[in-house]
Image (tube, rainbow, N blue to C red; front, top):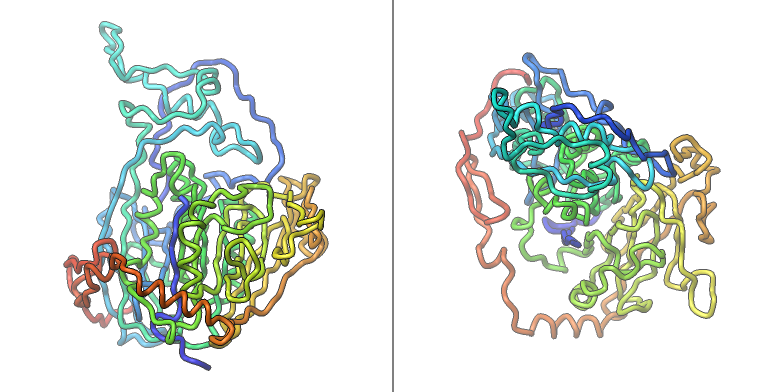
Amino acid sequence: RGMLGSSALTLSLLALGVGPHVVFGGTPVRGRTSIYQRVGSASQLPMSHFAPNTRCVEPPCSEQVHLQLGGPGEMVVVFASAPSTNTVARVIFGEAGVPSSKLAVFGTTATYSQLVYWYAKHWNPDMGLPTLTPEQVAAIRTTSSWASDPKSGLHGSAWENISVEQVLEEGDQLGNYKNPSEHYNSPQLHTVVLRGLRGGQRYEYSVDRDDRVFSFVMPEDTFPFTFGVTADVDQTEVTNATFQALAAMAPGAVLLAGDLAYANGYYPRWDSFGKLAEALSAAVPTMTCPGNHETGYMEAFQSYKARYPMPAAASGRFDRRRTPWLVVMMHAPWYSSNTKHLQEPELMRGDMETLLYSFGANVVVSGHVHSYERTAPMYNNASDPCGTTYLNLGDGGKGKANVKWLPGEDDAPQPEWSLFRQASFGVGKLELVNDTHAYFRWHRHSCYDEEAPLNENFSASACVSTGDDSLQKTLVSDETWIVRPSVAQCKGQEQHEAQMKARPRSPSFASLIGIPSCGQDELLNTTTGECIVVRGPARRLDTNFV
């Protein structure tokens, strides 16, 4: 077992870009009921599927518990609670089976509000079942029950009487700021950092206003180290299969390369996603980066940043002598032979690929394209033994798989650099075996099938996604060794790295601000790098978990 070091894995988090609080009020005018007809794809689970947590003395109880790694020896716990409660940002934790080790640690609490974005595909999707009906949207947008004077009958400036026809005709638009029912108010979001954790040790923890006891194993900074990898997960039965497959592999951490909730401006969907993911992410730290569905549709990263604060400032610089593996996570793939989203991040690749190459990035984990593909090591649009292997895993559960692929040169059925591709749903397992060898395995768990109920076929050993024209469409899994090239092999790359280092450049944000060592009564703000005082110091407890 080789040592990984405190910064053995560097994640470059690059962006491409408690229950619903939207009130259903008013009565829509009678009219056309819907233009919706069920068409192909995995469909989002209805809001009614996500029951609230009731395991506390006085509901509403805390929920949406999830973990993510912080700095060395740190685990970050995030959970949500209803704004009407006096819930405290507190986690009680200790070594499993050692009651005397329990501590109470305090953190910070935040809330946010956003205007709902009415995206037509919420009620008229290209595929699957709708998130909302036009009738529900009309009811939310209608203010006639309160925005007028009952004596004079005069309408106020906020008066609206929205019909179903109007919803269908107007399509996409931002909610009306004059209507409180079109404002989403988040639950209280609590962030608590657990420090001084030992690798390999199992810890138990509970959050305030929740009788459930969770546990996790703090990842060890030694080989072998296993990651579960996925992207574009959404909230479908296929998503459930993805989360279950990731949990079954018992990884040290999960990498989720963007497009998490697919809320698309209807922000209660972030709460339902937190409930769906809790079984996995309350036990396994889940590291994420944002995708286009975290910024588009008026999302503007707001919900994502409030719920998934990644430890950017804690990362600092890294030493490749202590960090043999460099794994980069971004949403849109630089290399893909699928016809969907072709070359969308080309400007990003042009600006950043040389940087990744000069520092010997080994693996890039991406999503965006709703299929699976693995490439040869690549650099500058060509295979290169010193380049980066691209794992495109946008097959986590979102909708219809992207089934059409491009041919190779001279009418070859597949580009030489595309080593495996398939338009179905599955998960990846990346095991860093030692400082030179990693083993990667992708395994299919379901297919897109237009003949199956809701177009979801979970006969993984026999299914083929409808319309998939890849050479590997019938194969259940893809397995390969990823081998780090030797220094002798990549001398040119080493020289290039030296040239890059010699170039005058602005220091990183982390080096500009410095990374302070925070006390037990302080919390590191990973955006500014400052230590902030929390409500109270960590204190040892003699009582059992509550």
